[in-house]
Amino acid sequence: MSTMDGGILCSPAPEPLAPPSRPWRRRLLLGGGLVAALLLGIELSNSLFGDHLHVVVPGQVYRSGQPTRRFVREVVGKYGIRTILNLRGTCEQADWYLVEARATAEFNLSQEDIAFSAGHLPPVNELRRLVEVLDRSAPPILIHCFRGVDRTGMASTVARLLKTDCTLDEATNELSLRYGHLPFGRTGHQEEFFQLYREWLQENQLRHAPNVFRDWVQNHYCPGACRAELQVEPPLQGPLQLDANQPTAVRVRCKNTSIRGWRFTPDPNAGIHLTWALTQLDRTAVAMGRVGLFPASVAPGEEIALTMVIPPLRAPGDYLLQIDLVEAEHCLFRECGSQLLELEVQCR
Figure 1 (spheres, helix red, strand yellow):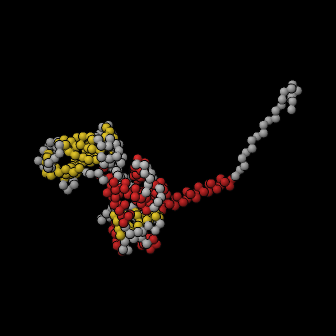
Figure 2 (cartoon, rainbow, N blue to C red):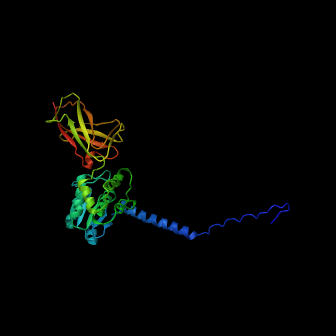
Figure 3 (cartoon, one colour):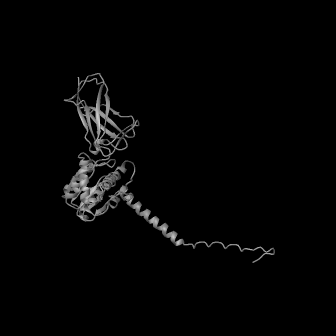
């Protein structure tokens, strides 16, 4: 179409077509999300307030929270449980432990007690015993801690690595929000444990297999930075001698025998430090302290010498001095299986 002056009159461009409305799709997505949230809520409610019973390896391994007598009777009848694996350790004075021990005796079950913490990496010896129990105990096995979340998730992952052909990523699904596990804070050390295994596989160009995992646990596992050799300088030939009413300096050489570097910091709430406690023979505390509040790095295989000062003691007698390293965001090294340095002390 032309205008009177010869210009071209352009028709306005048509409005773009709006996409067809599909309210059914939005409703479907919303409904699916609500169903997923509801199922997750049910799982979490079961984790926090219920027995938290789940299948780990069908017919072989199950997981739960702390069992009662009624619960033991039910799982024996329904799943034929023959072994209960308690990850809370031997606690003979605790009511829950007595209830469990009586129930396992009543229903003719084996009970295995192993001590793990939800807040730090597993100690070497306890981890080896876990593998032994899973390999040799009469199945089906019921694994539990208190809530059946963190320690139970770690042990259930180990069970799947030993008893199935699943991948490492598939096995670690036992540590997930579905069971109430949160992968950060202190409980994040459960994921760190399997990350150590993953890094070892990569460094050695290996793929996971049950026999490979057993070899790693038996011969190669190290709990992160939490392993050390501690020695007093000069070496003692007998008890450490102190003079009453006089401060005493004690020099300790710390060798990093772990697979990760140490980072000392001025902040007592971060990094690694040396900690010590002086007690009477009945374990009554007398004095304690922390050393190494300065910036320093110690690579694996390297050493650092630290000096601690014991304040004046007024009462002559025999004492016990315990020396350890601590990773502030994690735990005392001895809680991961490192050797604690203990010295007899005589105050004259």
